[in-house]
Image (cartoon, rainbow, N blue to C red; front, side, top):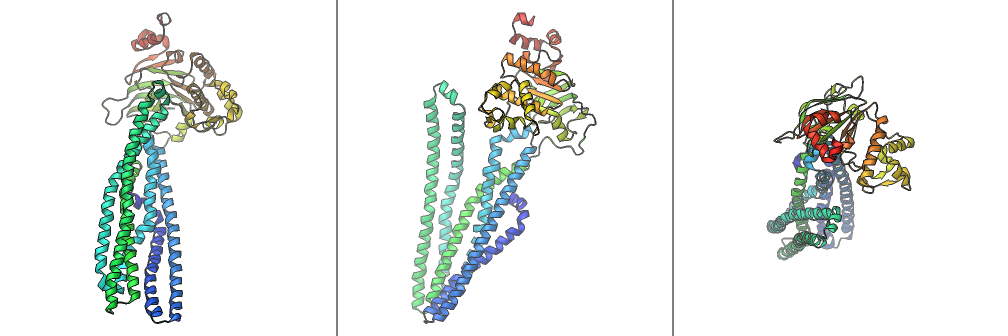
Length: 577
């Protein structure tokens, strides 16, 4: 998966990558050439007392060093831009793919997982690309070139490379093999700490209400201690790498000097050649160390790439029509013909054989027990889900064939858990219509019974709203969400239990204020309270995904036992009679 992701997403950056390889090749070759020039200065200049030769070769060394520095800086610059561009493209691809998902795919992955895949996972692969442009490209060039240059200086000492390099690889490899499982375990421990901390912060009122602070403190302490133990173990292993590298480098240097000194004494080697050979050996060992570090990063990046590809390869169950239809007359007539919905692999469908018609100027109430499929039924209209059987039609056109923008511009929904964005009251209301005036906003707030508490805020429409609307109450959040829908003024209104947090008086005033505003629109209201829908033009009774009855309040009281039970559970016997 990692190779596939890199191949697909780095294809637009072929030229910058080739430029990075070229710059690293030139820079590394220049770096490898410097020890050879240094050896010439020692053997030909210093040993023979030739200042002119020293100055000439020294100037050449300075020029080579400048080339090496310039190539290294350019390679890092181009590599960094390439890696950042790669990360930007992958994040954008994930964002657009998630934006195409239906509620089914979002529920499958979960919002926290999608956020992690779009941030941390992309960052890990992006870091691999960046280090590959700097370390991974340099390491093989440095290693192969160092071996060639060292053999040119003295082939008799080459056996030292056959000993030192495997020793360094095996030593660092042994440490890394033990570190990788530790990193995986540490990530699990971090997730556990985050989960417990999130639970305790979110449920702080429950914790205090049941006086569970000591138990929760102990639970967090256990998770924190487990994370600390794993992190300490990994840290100790990581701390061993640098001493091991230095030990191998120093022992290798001593061995080169020891065996090289005897060859110099025998007249088989020059002092400059020994210096150059020692430098090349150190460069080879450093290249091996860089390559080993890269090997440690690849498994983690591979896991992240697999998670990214999983999202990118997931097609939305709500597909766009090949030939979208725009109806000539947009009246807002909603019809369901034998509509059914089932999750893949589920034993029973959530909805089955739902048939109903809702026309402009009418209100349709939907009532039923918890889990009856009311929310799913509303979600079929704006295509949050697609029916698995039957059809949903708007203006006599199947919603699966409608132009998506046309459908979404005609349908507005207040979800069961209304969500407000961070910003102000005005910015949240204008989410429904960016061009709405302040007068339109106040008008929508008046209808939604939210104008009083907004006026009570010192800033009015400019009053700040926290992420999710956490700085307002549940009822205020519902009323602001309803006002946002009113600002949009769609042809089909969908209220998914949107009055549940309102008291009965506010609920009644809001429903009364809605009637003149929605006289030409189709209104569907999901409610748990019968009082919210008893005046509807028709009421649909759902139970276990099936329609048990359709009619007015009085008609259902005479014909539908399930509706009678629901009413009896909420009203007194006299009120039912």
